[in-house]
Image (tube, rainbow, N blue to C red; front, side, top):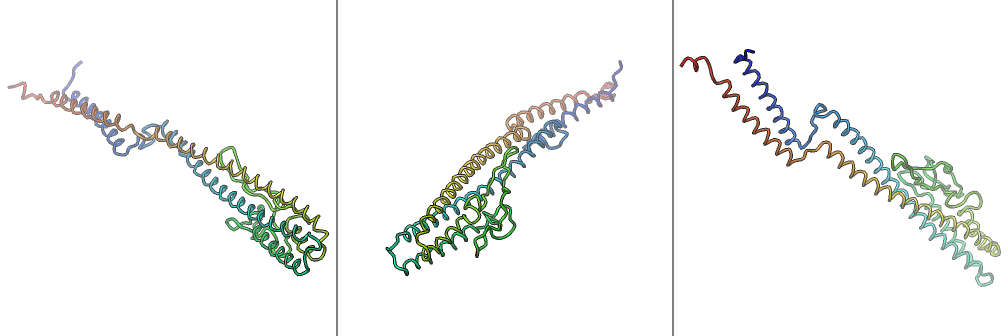
Length: 294
């Protein structure tokens, strides 16, 4: 088969272009620090990178949900503990007022006044809000969970407020007023109101009031334990989510990022090969007709 000088030149140029393209790709990878600079670099790798980035976005949203849930649970726990402290003070006053014959009417009136003031404090704590929503009001969109005057529950109980913390798990972050403080005429605020009245009107009834108050306090303590358990669970999910985020970062780096020493070595080898090809091509296409006529 006859090989012309033009064919030799074209073949040499094609080889040089291939080498130059490979050299350019390696230089681009080294400059950007990424294996994938365009989908055509690796369709499979691009697909994996897109899936990993979607997982990272979901993990970031779960982290925000967990942070919000932790804030909600921590504030709920703190408020319940404060209300327990106030309720213990009410109990102490009830025990003090139940000592028949040991106190004057003015002393009982002072106890009743203090108890009524503590009831107002309890109602204020029960109407604590988080991001403009009542903490113990369920899914109520109002500003309060309890009527400040009557102490009646005006929230929406029965529907839980939850935060999704993973693709398969949600954690409840609220506790409604009736769950924590009782309901109807036997809730915390009704009992404290009754105690304030009985301190002056019917000291003998304080014994039953004390028993009812103890029952509500046990309910409140159980609520604190429940909130604490959910808070601990939320903390565990936060750690799991953090570990997952680190794993996804590593997975994405394996797909997208270059191996710097390996890429530098490949670039040097490709550059050497390109220079050798240039030298060989120059020798192959140098002879002309004049060289043979000399």
